[in-house]
Structure formats: structure tokens, C-alpha cells
Length: 114
Image (cartoon, rainbow, N blue to C red; front, side, top):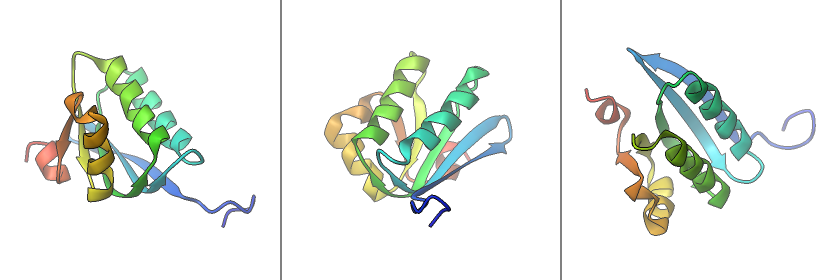
């Protein structure tokens, strides 16, 4: 629990992998935590950098998390965002058709082309 009494549902970090920025998230992406992911993606893309998004440690993705990815995909078109997915993330992305706008990978090395 944090000082406010709300558990920290999501951790978001940024790292460099060569010349690519990787935005990683772990935990649950829902209405309470999606802003942290949105903020990190906004900061990275403000410099016209197209990050790889690593969601392999995400255990739950609600509709607001899908909206964050959709907003990013719309903003960076015609480029396609590379997203590393867990089984918990892949399913909602595919069911909503968002996989047509993103490139999904099963591992970070695969997304980075290694």
C-alpha cells in the first residue's frame, strides 16, 4: 500500500536498448494505473522516439489500457508500435482488433530484432 492507502497496481520504467527506448510495465493496467503508462509513453514520444513497449509482466489489461495503446498507435501512424505481450495482454488486443495497428511479439529480444 502507498501512503494514500491505494496499492501500487503498476510499475512503469524506461530503459535504453541501443538506440531504442523500451517502456516496460508490470502489474495491472486499469483505470487507476493507466495514467502512469500514458505519461511515460507521452514523454518518450514527445521527442519523436517510437518506443518498444514491454507488457510481458502485465497480468491484467482493462479497456483504458487498450485506449492508451490505441491513442499511441493513432499518434505515430503510419509507423506501427512494437509491443511485447503476455497472454493476459494478447487476448484483449486481438479481440478488439488492435493487433491490426500494433506489431505483437512474445519476447523483448524478438521485438528488438535480436
